[in-house]
Length: 145
Length: 159
Image (cartoon, rainbow over all chains, first blue to last red; front, side, top):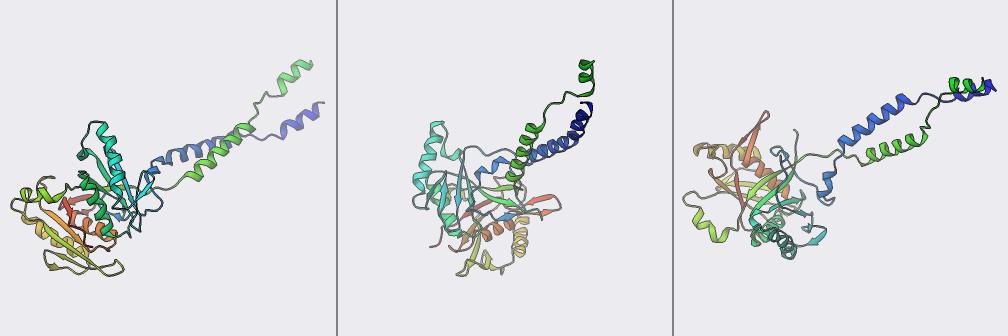
């Protein structure tokens, strides 16, 4: 009876160091994880520039426009062209107006693909300007070199 | 006797298996969702619709005109700043801008300083526009950023 019991105990190793390590790893990955990527779009590869720095505070009333390589504009999950963008923008603006703000207070964040035609980006900016939007942010990747 | 034996020899251990299972699941989840994110930043540009205001606002200074030409593949062919040809070199564009800006006082903040108007071919790749904006808006000395031109606008798109 006694001998049996001893065998049972010996089969269990000490788990404590392993669990310590695993918790350390979990903590590490939890700290590194970044959920703010939700505003990215996988059709867009941003150009990069040395001069930009990550903004200290998030921009007020952001309207994020993704411009894919073929010139399509993605706003809030819907796809537009530069001509039809007016519809989507006016929907965004009605939200801003409901909060008693002017279109000039909104920030249009333009995330254009690096190989998109510059003219397409200009058309999108023009369409936004026609909706009385004034503040634009051209989003680029930070180049560490 | 039997009673004492039990409480002395056999340690009352909690079963760890379930916890370790979940902990490993969490570990795998965080490892899979991890993406090394490149930091992003903005070039902030204030561009109201030009047509009705431009005459009143531009009192004496005309904007510097930056012309970017592209070939049929959207690659950059030439840069011209106020009619002086600069080839395709963004460094010489920066030097030109430094020369132009040093005349007027730099560091006057967002309100002062010259303005640049970027006029590109329609099919030029956006990447080159960003490079041009980078060259025009400043340069880096070590960790310090020296600002050159902060006011940027686009000319009418060329179809």
